[in-house]
Length: 372
Image (cartoon, rainbow, N blue to C red):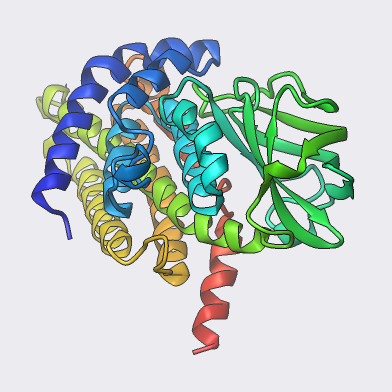
């Protein structure tokens, strides 16, 4: 349920997005750079620790609040929002709920402020969706764990100074907090990509990387618990980004169809255009209803894998379809950069791949339903 507090958050983030996020979006898409200074601004406003309790420096809010923030930011800049998500959810949320009090004291203040950028290392060059088949290894060596392997497509990899990393310790998936300065750790050059260019990604490279035993996150072999708990809010965040993309593209096509005249009348009076607009509105509203309904059922101790899989599966494809329709309505202007819908179209495609592919969601949903 969306409360008055949620609506206040929406108003705050929407104003921030329009005044601070929108003006810098095209510059960072074109340069392929992540705006870390803007991330620190969000930290100063308390928007990084949305899901962290107030007693530990966060906002003490819920999954619905996180969805609102991701939707509103993505309306203006999906690429920046992806970098924010990788920091706020993939690192901060995951770290908080798995970490110890001592680890919180050491790392939490600087990641909540945005002073230190975080990232999460799960995907590997030979292992994407099949995360249980990951090949990065860890072994105990007295007061250290020694990590070997590679991670790839890691959002915030080039900028981050702290990483939450999954590796196999005695064949059991285990989570570690790795600092950039640790011996044996490095990152590759930035990986070029088709969309989400305002966020960056790279490989993470572990060559006998020595991680202090105090940087074990949770318990040995407890990585699956950390991973699965965090995947649900991650998928909601990505679904919310899809909603922001769809809203932006819908607004663009409605405005253009009102202003543009062809054959003596506004574009909006042509039946073909009405079909694009009508279908896009229906998809956007369906996305909104599904995402916010599921968000109300998710929390640190409350699971809804079926719902989060469904929300991201539907929203990711619907957002790409709405973005495609927007380009079609705008025609040549849509294909060029002036109205930015081509950027949102490029960005939307990632949602069908990152945070779980369409095929992974379909598999999970079918498996859960057939189990009854």
